[in-house]
Each structure stands twice: as structure tokens, then as C-alpha cells.
Image (cartoon, rainbow, N blue to C red):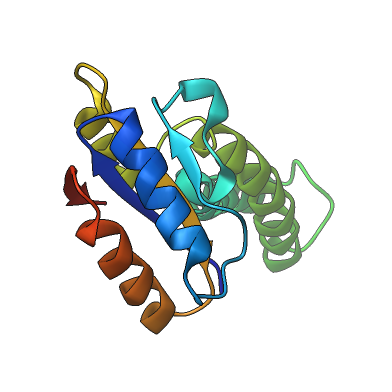
Length: 156
């Protein structure tokens, strides 16, 4: 399981110092710590977006709506299928379509965590260190290392 960590610093020099400290620690990291100066809407990672929630909601709503329409059409005689089969086909096709549309729509919406990080980075010369670890224990240890560095203001 990949767990991203973000710690905000009052300036880029402190963030670079903290990234170096984390890199030199014995902690196994998924990737090298990165200094981030802003959260750009075009660079939201999938894990930091609302794509999963969008896919779930889109699949459920669209699937049920299409199942209802197909069931009514079959009951009225507009489709030469039994009502239950028409509703099942509508649920499956509508659900698949809704998952795709919902994931696409949700991928452009930042998660609450990204909104918080964006708000923390607004200001003069602020920067954050981003790192990815495997377990909650490693995440806590990395957060401790980063928060000990000078200029650390908040862990997101």
C-alpha cells in the first residue's frame, strides 16, 4: 500500500534540507522525496483525486437509471425482452458507462487532502516535501523526521 506524505515548510531552503534528511534516513521510501512549490490543477495524481468516488457514484446512479428505463420499456412492450432481463442489461450497461464517466469527472476534482495542501502552500516562498512509503508505521516515522526539520509548519 502506497501512502503519500506532505509536510509544509515556511521556505524552499528548509524544505530542501528536510528532503535531504529524509533521503539520508534508513527509511525505505517508494520514491525520492520531492520539494513541491504549488499544487497545480493539471498535475493532480489519481490517488489524490476524487476519481474513485466519482466512479462509484456514476456507476450506481447511471446503472439504476438505465435499468429503470429499460424495465419500463420492456413492460410497455417497446423491447421484446422479459422485464427482469431488460433491467439487468440496463443495469450492466448503464453501470459500466457511469463508472467511466464518473471516474473521468472525478479525476479533475482534488481530494480534500489536496485542497488542504493547496491552501497551506498559498503564500510567499512556501514549499512542501512529498514522499511515499509502504506502511502506516513508516509514514509516521517519515512524518516525524520531516517535522523535526526547521521551518516545518504542518503535515498534511
